[in-house]
Image 1 (cartoon, helix red, strand yellow):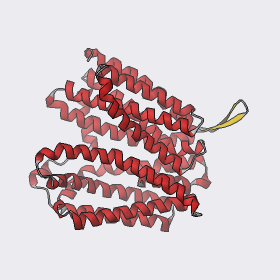
Image 2 (image 1 turned 135 degrees about the vertical axis):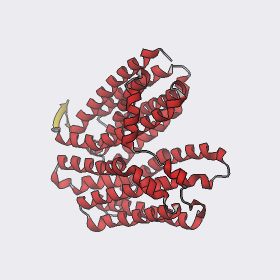
Image 3 (image 1 turned 30 degrees about the vertical axis):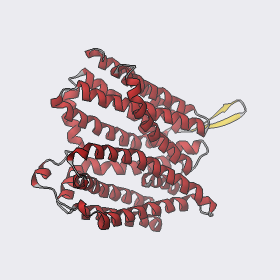
Image 4 (image 1 turned 180 degrees about the vertical axis):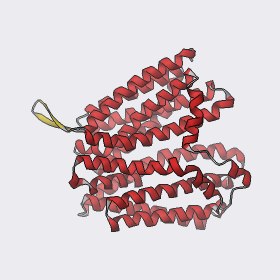
Length: 405
């Protein structure tokens, strides 16, 4: 919910400066989230392991609580960007401490895989959809109590802040088992940086047609998904929607992603993995073009769900291909490379796309007796859709160089 509220507030604070300023502010918020993980990821993980994990998590949650509650009192874009940066730094300490503490909460090592799956479900499913739904609810409830849009977003930020306070209290008083420090051996196994994973995986990728096609496809699929997320706020406004519509579009991407991952194994029984992977990316691109030409919010939501579903099918199929067709000795590196690339492409698209949207001129298109305002979001979505579809075709050709699945 914090990401939705922060990006929404960025557009509200620059509302009087025009569409271009809003686009740059939106891109600035997301870019600010990207910088810490690129520069300080390994350092945060190592430092977090040197202290009591429970105290690290509690300190980070309390810091997030204070930072989020400070935003309404300052009410300036520069402070919003500073808070976004500090929140991301806190998250970078919190996540490795949490991940390292999970084994201490399990009864046996055999439960580790189930715990990891549950963590992914909560992180990318329940948390995203629940946070978006709660933000939509707050956005709708605010005007009922006479609050304007900016005040409503401030309320959402404060609500999110108190959620972090509750998390800190629960971790400190109810889960003492989280406490512990990493051993020297564990510290030596600290995860490498995103840049290191990208560089390490690149040398293998360029030499292997299968993995090269897989990587090309992943870039296309998540460029499509990232473009939807990046343009959702401004796109919702072009359809006459507000913050509630924005949060619904945001949640629809991840709801579609989950649906695609559920349907993917069923389709894989009928279609070879390599063919399914490329076809899913083409489907995501075509669906994104439909999003670009949508004239109604419900049509847009349906199309966004389909984009997410195709991206989910492609992602799950890609991971399956890695697990079944990549040699065991290099599988870990390829997995790390693909996962890192997904993160980089998503955050990169979310930071660059709003800036591109801001420099594209707005036009009015007349369809019959109806005048439609066509802003930069439409052109960017259409362009990303065509690009993703083309990438899907290229990926399929690359992957079939080594034979069909």
